[in-house]
Every structure is written in C-alpha cells, then in structure tokens.
Image (cartoon, rainbow, N blue to C red; front, side, top):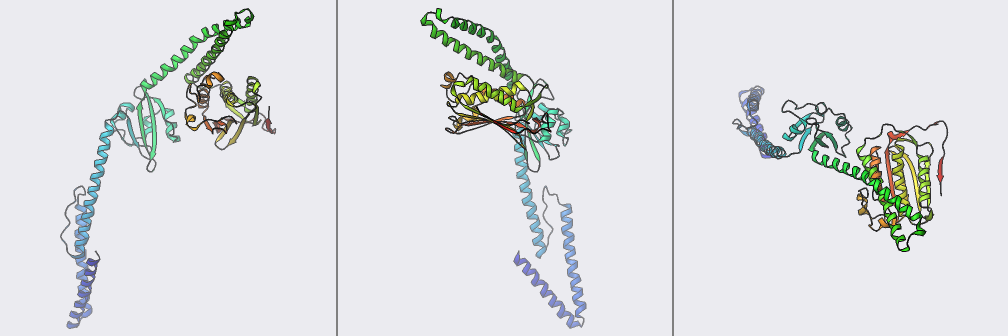
Length: 448
C-alpha cells in the first residue's frame, strides 16, 4: 500500500512539473496548471462515480467484480472487493453454525426460546410451540409475558432472579407440569429453557401421598403398641426378669418409631399444604426463650450453657408452630451432638439483606463433604449416632421446608473440632414493627 501511495504522489509531482513547464513555454503557466488540476479532479470524480454505481448496484450476498481502474483507485476497488468476499465467507460460516444449532435444537424435546432485551420473542424451536403454544411467525417479537400470562411467571420474569427454576402448569394443557429456567446473556438478552416434568411431578405427588397415608396408617398401631409396652413397664416388678430388658428395648424403639412417624407427617403436611395465610406477628426473643427452656429440660443431665442474644423488639410475620418446629429442631440437634457442659448460642441479627437466626455450638463439628447432604431425609453423618441419640434423620429436612415456606433458606457452616453454625435467613419483608415502637427494648443476654 505504501508503494502505491508513493507512486501516486510521484505521478502528481511529475504531472505538476510538466504542466508548469508547458505553461512557461506558452507564457500562461497559471492557466495551464489550473486546466491540468481541473482535468485531474474530473478524473477522480469519474472514479468516484464508478465506485458509487458499483456499491449501489452490488448484491452483497454474491459480491460482483469491481469496475476496471488503474493506480490508487484500482487498489481501493480491489481492497473493497476483497473485504466483501471475506465478509461473505464469515457470514456463510456464521449462518452454517446457526443452521446447525437450530437443527440440533429442533430435535430436542426441551423447549428453547430466545428473548431480546425488550422481552420480545426472537426465536424458538418446535418443542416450544408444543409446550407453550407459540406460533410462527405470528408471535415473533411479541412480549413473552403477554403470551404466558401466569402471574407467577410474570413475577419470576420481571424480578430476574433466575437462580432457581420455576414450576408451572402448561398454558396449552393444564394437566402437564413445566419447569422454566432462564439465563441471561449478551446485552440483556435471555435464553429460556422449558421442559415437561409431568411424569416426575406425578411420581413426586405419589411419593408424598404414599408417605402421608402410610404414616397415618402406622400411627394408630404404633401408639397402641407403645401404650401396652408402657403399661407393662409400669408393672415391671411383676414381670419375669428375663423379659424386662427386651420390653425396655421394644418401648425405646416404639418411641423412636413414633417420632419418625410424627416427623414424616410433619414433612408431608409441609410439602402438600400451601402456606397458611393466617400468619401473625411473632416476638422472636420470646420464641427463643421457649426453645431454650425445652432444650434445657430434655438435656438437663448434660448441664450445657444455652445463651440467647436477641432484641425484644424483633417481630417477624409467620406461622408460629412451623417456626418453633424449625428453630427447636436446630437447638435440640445442637444439644444432642454437643458434649456435656458445652456451649450453644441462639443469636438474632438484622441487616439490609434481612434477618438471621443463628444456632451455633462448640461441638465436634461436621466434615465438609457431609454438609451439602445434611437436609436430605434420613441422611446421617455417622450411622452409629442413630442408636445413641434417637434422632429420626428428618429434622433438618423439616427446617429446610419451613424456611422455604417463609421465603427463607438454611445455611450451614462447620469445621471438625470447632463446632457448627446453622443460620436461618429470612427476607426483610418478614420483619414487622414492634408492638410498642415508642418503648426501648434493650438487648438481652440470657444464660443457663
């Protein structure tokens, strides 16, 4: 390129000198130079006209050869033609990639929907038409919230909190259950994946019904068995000596079965019933005091120190029995697995993110690989703990479900040998004004 410009400048200088010499010979140097300059400008205007006509009439899907030209104009036209050719190749490659992506998604049973930054539909695969009822090309650029009018979906889409999928009945067939998952990309665009989970949903409902029904059916016979065993133990002095220990063990296991059935029924109710709308303002400090008293009675022989750190003016809106069950489970677990004369703290803190109820202890702690599975039903860190503590393995599952019904979550942190910390995170909207806002409520610290 540099040599072409160098040659062009050299030709201009030579032409100017020739024109100047010719003008000097005829006695009109200025007139001759002016005429030559005008001719040079006319030449460039002609070349510009060629370029304009070529670009105007060109079909960029199939680049046409440039008009014939020499010098620097030939180089410019050839360069533009080369750029057109490269752009066409890049477009063809990109189109090939897009076509392959569309062909592959067309074979999926999973609905794939691309949504622009204004919330309009850009593209979707055939599965989206079957699951969501979208129509091509009628619905193109339509707002997705105008086509899927379920309030839960509109709220999910507008809040843009896509860390968890959303489950909804299909707008095409209400008997089917769909799972929506959205991710953002680019400059505010969104990719929505929708899959049919009807079979999984039916199996889950069957499981919940089975657990609930079996638990109800087992409760009566277990209660009868426990009652007779307790009656026999009350008259232990009249029992043969060799039957006393077996009957005591039977009574112990029947109590354990009662606890398991009770917790299974609680879980079944939490899973199958909608959140109660009759919620009330609960003074959290009073609730923690009740939990503390119960834990002290159950584990009086361990002589543990249970401390509450909570402000009297903290009130939360929720279901009292459910929240008591959750916090009590955490406190009783802490007492169970903490050594005698150990320390258990019940702490409440407020922040811009919401309310935290923390149950911490200085017990043996939990290895990191167990923590993600602690809220699974019947999962145990150590199988030998079952006989020692009499736990059901359902307590943390109950805590998780109760918090979910209160728009909260459970966070667990622990280190072996350094104790454990279970944090109930509740959103700010759960906080309510204290009953007596004009009265000061000092922070209390209660120790056993």
